[in-house]
Amino acid sequence: MRNVRNASRTLALALLIASFDVNKAMPQSSDQMIAEAENGDLTAQVCLAERYLDGDRQEFDQVQARRWFLKAARNGHRGAQDRIATMYLRGEGGEQNFAKAVYWLKKLAAAGSPAGRYRYGRALALGEGVAVDKRQAGAWFLKAARAGFREAQRRMADIYLLGDGIERDPVKGLYWLNILAENGDSGAQAKLGRMFYEGDGVPADQGKAFHWFLKAARNGDPGAQWQVSSMYALGEGVDKDEKKSLLWVKNSADSGFAKAQFKMAVILEKQTGPDSSLGPAIGWYKKAAGQEYVPAQNALAKIYSKGIGVAEDRVKAAFWYRRAAENGEPLGQYNFARLLAKGRGVEKDDRQAFYWWKKSARQGLVMAQSRLGFCYEQGLGVSRNVDEAIRWWTQAAIGGDAVAKKNLEILCRTSAAACRPPDPGT
Image (cartoon, rainbow, N blue to C red):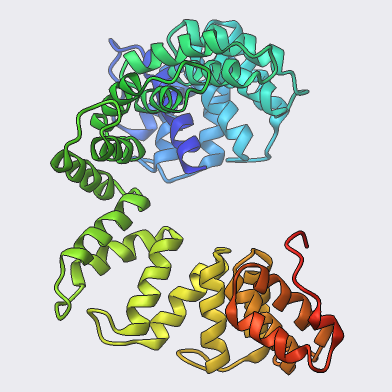
């Protein structure tokens, strides 16, 4: 949402700047500017509105900003028309009113503003203040794209590649992607790289994939930097080069890409002696784990649980296993349940342990299925239910769990249902 708002503000400021009378000196005093604005001076009206919004020489006041933008908009000022549309969309300085926002966006679009055409098309695509009409949206996006408006070019690429509202046309989609990519758009470069890498809509070509990934990587795209690192490591589309691979994984990690941060942690951990501190590695693990990258969360939990290169800390181990569990990762769920069952780093709670083992078991983790069978057989965290114990031990036995097989053999002495051989089809 913040990126969308920043983009909208950038569009509005561009329109405002383009509409200013650059030869006219703006009055410095507020009283003089208000007087000129009251006398109908468009530039003064817009500058005054901006001052109210920015709190620059005027007290911050969205109501007054909206008032002056509306006056300028009614007098034909394009930048003000864009700004008043935005304020209606967000409910800034008064009521939120999508229909009024669309009224002004349509005026901008009809007047030939590329930004207005894009924003009106977006309103049509989303049904904001107007009935959804993806074909009409596409037509306005196309006009803006042909005028060189980058956001519209992105939308046209997506529309043609996905067939969103119009017939899918990969050739036209690639046309717009290429325009963006050749003009330095890292997102389009990375997307082209992915398409050539996977053979998605184009013949697979690792050389072309590397070409575009490298361009995107040099333009700072973290995912592309990771991909370049991987391709150097594997020799895909380029000669193998471990040094360059490491350089790009570090760049990707520094750019905030969680998978690369995890890789850096693994590399540093391997370089650390058995009796040395894991401080540098843990720093990278924490960065990745903080972005909810589950392998890093599990790795941190294991490190703290076993005291690998750090002081053993059961509370931190439980914290990170829980984070992994809450992110739906079956091994994290299994290990967090173990800590709950033993009261290690967290208060002992058999019911919660059962809850997390069941979640893990349902995702197919054999260890969890075996443990769930034990809970049902013993009545730990759940009412005792031998039939359910047999069902989960059977599932675990099919998965190769020796303990589950042994438990079924023991239970077979008292329950005929446990004596049936596991059916791999169940």
